[in-house]
Length: 198
Image (cartoon, rainbow, N blue to C red; front, side):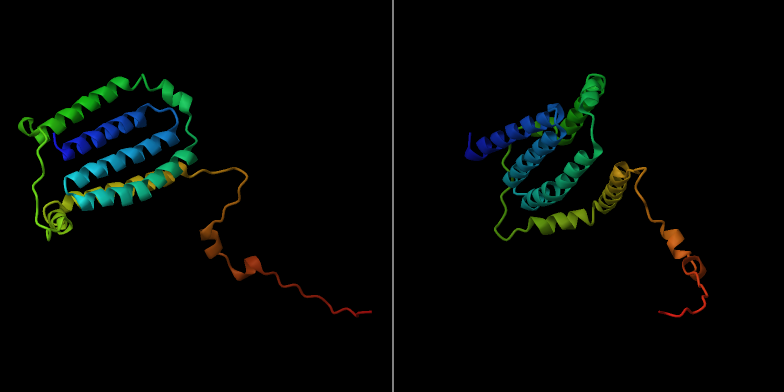
């Protein structure tokens, strides 16, 4: 067993452990932090596969930006942990069914003969995997890429709608009324006789 295989098994074990902790830990903030650890472990495995661009993107985009948004949403939603834990057993069969479905799909994609650990193909020093990824992404997979962008936009709008709260004693501005206002609505001219000052 080579050094790269040992490193792979270490990061794979950390990733599986942290992913299990994401769905089993009671505190939602701790679950988000375990998700960060999962992303870091996955980025390390991608580095072993010489996919440096994907690894750096995973760390910068997901850990640096998306997880910060996750933490904001988790802290603003005021999640009732007790009610969530009570519904855990209720939705456990559905979760197990989804788990086995995803495992079967991954097995079909990877293939039974390719499940062994094979070292990635070595490339020359001037090989640019970012360029190769861009060529494939914007030619072969351009439509799925655009669809994923639309789905992310819908998710952002849904997150804003979920966290929007109307408090009864808070005053809000109505831009339509502010634009439609006229001078006579704001200013009242009063004609007064002049008075002598003493």
